[in-house]
Length: 391
Image 1 (cartoon, rainbow, N blue to C red):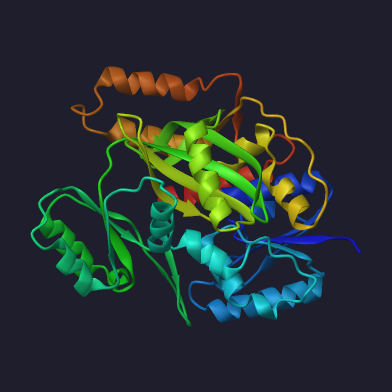
Image 2: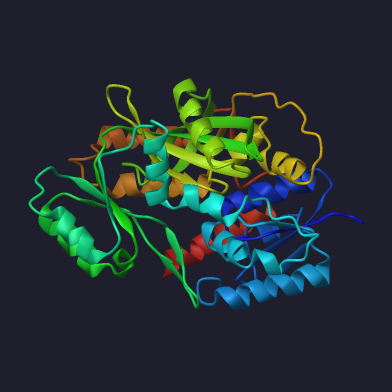
């Protein structure tokens, strides 16, 4: 029987990268999203676009739609890209047909890493540095923990970025508070702090990540990249990045944690490294990351390798190559933010310099979305981008 793959979260750039990866290997790939059209669904490598209920509004209806598509299309491999769809599938995993592969370990293993409170406790047990941390179960404990605290800024970090309830999914966010008043206001005015969270010291430094694939507790491959430009410019989503060698210390930290959780599948392990070179664990995300296309272009084809290890097939040796990848419309957004920024922050000379670098990305730079031979996703993205400008 021909294997059939359903990639979810079709409007994510990582979904597009996964569809192109698997499609170029000759695999049959469908793409799902809660909208009628999607970025990855426009790819020529998508054999069948499907629509499902919004998992944020109705997790159960979303899952029932997935079950129907499994039966209708003969799906044998499910690949969720975001935490939201992943958590729903894991919750109802026992209801999936036995022949369907979901490339994740047990829910308990996922909880060890995806739940930041549990992760920081695990990291402490393994001797991996974390920021000074106070664990809080609710608003009351958070306000009590603030007490007369005077060392600011501090970080209010929900234990999960997505909280799965019976009838919805709640999105949370990390908040940096610079005063006690800001911290109290954040805790009392944001409803998601009724769920467990932590209060951490703020670590000055640069973010670094280790991307990994594990096969039932054993490492298969690693990848790292360097962010060259971000949106917004002060720090955010990467719009221009290049592959880099994996820092050995960070790799050891990541491997220690992933082995401890008997991890299976992909994971993004994030650290912040201070000016003295000390690395602190920030979080682990059990999913693909935004710069997935860079890893694939660099010879570490994570979607394909994940498919192989999850279906018991031999894994070929990967050969790392230096590559640079640019998200064009994200980079355009970044340039716009710089152009309209006050001259005190970006003087004219600096604005012109940024414009020059935008217009001359370099001959070795590849574009993430717009690719010859599969341009439909870019036209879809551009159309929605222009619609957004008109609002």
